[in-house]
Image (cartoon, rainbow, N blue to C red; front, side, top):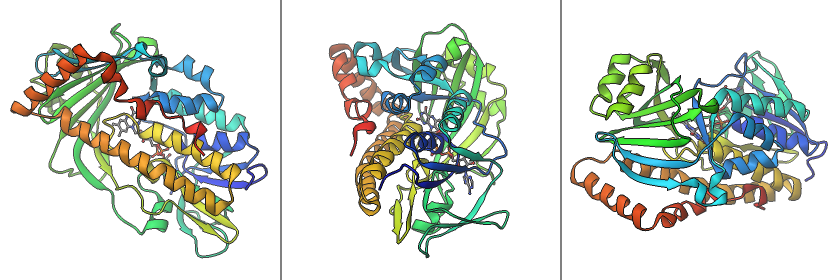
Length: 393
Ligand SMILES: Cc1cc2nc3c(=O)[nH]c(=O)nc-3n(C[C@H](O)[C@H](O)[C@H](O)COP(=O)(O)OP(=O)(O)OC[C@H]3O[C@@H](n4cnc5c(N)ncnc54)[C@H](O)[C@@H]3O)c2cc1C
């Protein structure tokens, strides 16, 4: 199939949907993005874009904009939350490919992608909710919440955790609570280094890094909980509960939590990776992208980068293979990689939250490895950060 002149409808103007919209439009496709929200908005918090995600943004011609809005990360540090002592430091500047690791305010990233999609010729329709998708005919057919029907020769579901297309392809199922909640906030910058720090404690951890040239500091603090009792996915946090959860942490982390008076609280939900990623129809196709296919815990900071990778792989395959072959190849390339990333994020959830002797043992092992073989620590992430989705065919 050739993308030039192809009509594409994307559900969802999140990071994955907008990146795909720009990429497809640059190849000459006629792209329409349907977004239920009345405005393109993101949570007021930061996001880490790792080298594998940044590679895709640069291939979309957004490298200069990325450099303008991002703080270039120099290191990743794991610390003992209670004492503040360093457990591991990975110097990202030691290798060129890992030097390309970014901290970005979500609002800046989404605005860069929105402007990039529009500049490439994609059309964005806000306040447009897709109520259901019908894949029984020759082409995908959308029923809008307004009652209107839309036919989409090529339909992409980049509609996140509650994806309508995912349920059409895989049957309806509710996302499950992962047993973790996250407070998110930005506070005033304090001149700290361009590093991501993970302060680890029993059943909880706190991640922090600078944003917007150091003007802000991002805080994501996670705690294990047995249940999430709210009807919604997020709620206003009680600041005292937040402070209590991190009261045993060392001074810098406690001080950041004290300042985060307007933190929001999220229950972290996810699905298993979708079984069916797409369907080829007689004159069309439908396919999933990003969190709609593979939501993850955020403990490897890879959710958005996986969506960016998806978009690069899908564009190359659609532009070079017949539809059925492109969809089959897409799933066979993306499902194992996203499964590996999600498993690594789940492992971080366990490792960050260790307690008692297991924690002492793990921290001692990591400290020795980091001191004796710092390059080995970095090379453990080659499979993740070294991957070039723009070359995958
Ligand atoms: C606490 C936390 C920290 C994180 N940190 C990182 C990080 O540092 N690095 C990283 O890479 N990832 C991180 N992630 C994950 C990352 O945020 C997500 O993986 C990513 O934003 C998903 O993008 P998406 O475009 O696939 O989906 P979404 O962002 O969910 O976008 C889906 C869009 O579809 C729209 N939509 C949904 N249904 C419909 C419908 N029926 N009709 C029309 N529109 C619809 C929605 O309104 C939304 O705009 C983090 C996540 C959390 C919770």
